[in-house]
Structure formats: structure tokens, C-alpha cells
Amino acid sequence: QSVLTQPPSASGTPGQRVTISCSGSSSNIGSNTVNWYQQLPGTAPKLLHYNNNQRPSGVPDRFSGSKSGTSASLAISGLQSEDEADYYCAAWDDSLIGYVFGTGTKVTVL
Amino acid sequence: QVQLVQSGAEVKKPGASVRVSCKASGYTFTGYHLHWVRQAPGQGLEWMGRINPSAGDTNYAQNFQGRVTMTRDTSISTAYMELSRLRSDDTAVYFCARGFFDYFDYWGQGTLVTVSS
Image (cartoon, rainbow over all chains, first blue to last red):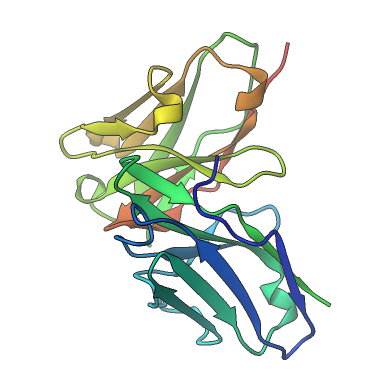
């Protein structure tokens, strides 16, 4: 069961901006950093953003993350067809003493 | 380059156990925690637990306490995840992932475990 809540889907046309929200609580997002993973169909997840708003090398700056209180968001600007994937937020949870993932958001490029 | 290569797909009967391996290369195996994450068909990601390859200490997600065992063999830079008393809802792809601080920077390719009578 996922502790972090995301919208099940999001969509946009090429070039548009899409934002994915991630809602948690004081024991996870509220007290720890948020990370985002991208999962293309049939592949392993890939780290997309870490420490709330940092991008690993190779990840385009079209992807930007932010956090406020017990929520976080990932924005994809200049949407491209290759961005069609599932996106998961994640954070450490101090109460569960474990790592928790979001419910996942499927991004569709129309 | 960092690589995590997992063992192949498994088919098990309910009640049996399965062991999945994850061989690391391209970095110092004992320098990073190794996590296990699973994904049931059409579902999201679920964290199972982690092992510190250096000391061998572990911590497991509450959902798997008593059924999962994570071990490692530092001589061959390989981590193992064993899940016992398998049920049909354990059918999933199991991933290992390298932990760096509180995020996972490299992932294995995944191992499909099918539990079916």
C-alpha cells in the first residue's frame, strides 16, 4: 500500500507543461527529501530527481521538482513523446522506518 | 560503469520460497546499501527492505517482516533476497537498487517471479 498520493494520470500535447503532485505527511515528505523516478514501459525505474529538486546528470532540465510542507510536485515543461511513462515520487518515512513510494502517475502525450 | 545484474525469471508454487540474486559491478560493493523493490503486474512500486553489504545488517518493510531475508556475499559482490511462504499475490517483478543517501541511483533489470499452482 502506498503512503504517498499521486493523481493516476496526467496528459498534455507536445510542448505543453504537465505537473504531477505528490501528497504525503509529516513523517515522510514533511521531514525528508523527495525523489522522483521515471519508469518507461517494460523497463526498470530510473532516478529522475533527488533531494527535492536536483537532477542527475543526463536528465533534461525540462524536468523540475519542488517541495512544500508535506507535498511535492514534478513539472515537465516542453512535453515530448519520449516523456510518456509512469512517474513515482518517493521518500523515507520516519514512522514506518522504511522507504515509501507514491501511487504513480501515468503521463500520456496526446 | 555501475551495473546491477539480476538472476532470471522464476516460477514457484504457493508455499515455496524463492531467492533472487543481484550481482554488482563497477563500484565498491560494500560502500552502498542495496535495496529491494517489487512491482506486481500493473501496480506501483513497493519497497521491501535493504541490506548494508558492509556489515550485513538489514531492515525490512513491515509488510514483509518474517517472510523476507536479505543476505550478501561480499566475495562475489552479490546480494540476495529470499521470500518464503509464497502466495499468488507475490507474483511480481523484483528489482534491486543501489542506495545513495535516501535515493536509488542505479537499478537492476528486474526478475519476474510467478507464483502459481
